[in-house]
Length: 118
Image (cartoon, rainbow, N blue to C red; front, top):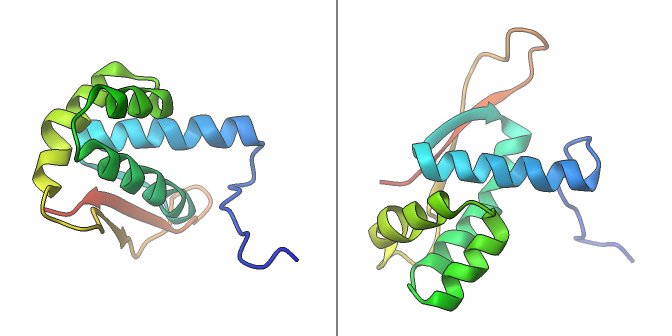
């Protein structure tokens, strides 16, 4: 049975979904806060949370694993140098999703902010 096997499909094929989540994660690491649709922010959250947990221990192996996930060395450097040290003592819950009351202008899609917890 397929119980609890749900994954955010985002109505795109798997390769597009992978690159979409990767690019949104890189933008979140670079800017600290991004505005996107609510479904996309829910898809990005576990991806980024696992990366921050990985980056809390700064080793060469962990940097290589993070680079394998992000494929962007600047984002990996910022993740290990700036983002992860803020969460050394925090056991989890590094990101926050905040819903925006108004939908997107074109199609009224529900929008939200995803940001790191301060």
